Length: 254
Image 1 (cartoon, helix red, strand yellow):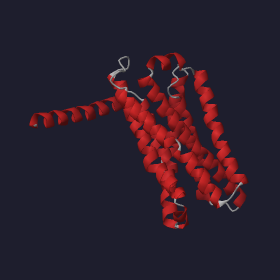
Image 2 (cartoon, helix red, strand yellow; image 1 turned 180 degrees about the horizontal axis):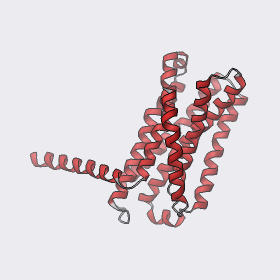
Image 3 (cartoon, one colour; image 1 turned 90 degrees about the vertical axis):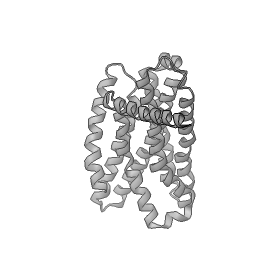
Image 4 (spheres, one colour; image 1 turned 90 degrees about the horizontal axis):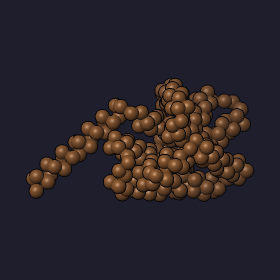
């Protein structure tokens, strides 16, 4: 499974970063958070490569494990930033239009890259099972209510966002739903595992949750697809049309 994830995800992630970077050079700040998210995925791929090579030196493995934890927590942080940015476009379009600059986005990126260092340093200097089971849920569970709030706030403010086109609205909602799904399906089970410390001793559960976390870089590539206009707009439009047709049929039957 890890070989498949690396062979598919690593080259596609590098291509996605290059494509999005060309958009930033054209003064488009929207892809900055997704670029940083994909860079954090590259860090996770580096750990996976070391994992499958099975290094003899335990120190090397531990160093890359800390690097993996750093990349994992950072990716969660940038998922929150992506959701926040999408929320501001819909709920506060005028404020976002005048505040979204490359400088502010870079400052936010520096903060997001810095905070996971606290988590890694705690793991390193307090390498204790109880400490790990305490701080890991904190860093992984805090983003969940934020993601739910951004999704709910976006759906609530959707009709009032007159300045945003219908295609852009569908793309924003689709991206927010995808971020919540990625977190819920891939990150939340691991958080529950750490909250219920007794399950961490079960090898089957640990391996299952490890595989889910390793699938997150592949899932993040779908966010890149939502940044690309064209085919995804047609897909979302067709889904919305199907939903409207089903609603019309149900109303007519009533």
